[in-house]
Length: 306
Image (tube, rainbow, N blue to C red; front, top):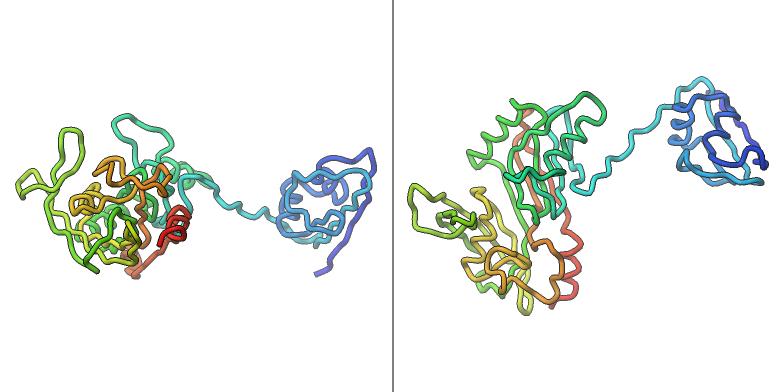
């Protein structure tokens, strides 16, 4: 591989954007210049140039070291979206780490920029328009892991796994009060009120069975860090179960709101995070498990608690 080095000292006539200087110096196209910058071929005053939008002034020294026979392709940029980060992706599905504050899907109010919409935008970014198929959901103010199908048949297979309670869904929560039991199970039926709030009720044709297993991770003076594993996945299940037991999730605006308030939990979000998601790949059959780190709001609260 024969490498070529070209360089120039900027004068007043060619000061400005570095990409224009590189094009003039090398005779390359715009896309080739972007690729050369992405592959570290360009330096300004001896330091790597990291963006084609960089500016150069009179007296700056610009150097290019590249292989004239090579086609330098622009590197795929990291997708930046405030609603989610990508944990895993293949041709069939995508696992994302949802930010607190975003709806998974629109309600009757037809909200914009929901998670499913943003993931669909991402999937359509590099090819034809594509849709993200919803498998399961997280409450608006809950963060953590979700899987979407890229095609309806894949989504249908994953949905069937959830119906059969096969996926492993583990959450971390900070709840009000000090829990006495090290572990346990909430096994009850949930009903829905006229205001759409959920509550524990006697079994009937209008209720849904809900099972949550929990274990205490850390006890503090007036709060408890817990891990909750879902056996069923009912709406608001974890929040209702802990509130009904007298230990509401911190910051919960819906269930035992006053008790859920804490002077050091100042975030709008609630202290509930989907930390682990495991399921069987719908095509390969491979067992897959994904982990999400504890959000910074949790870490800061725990550092200041005793």
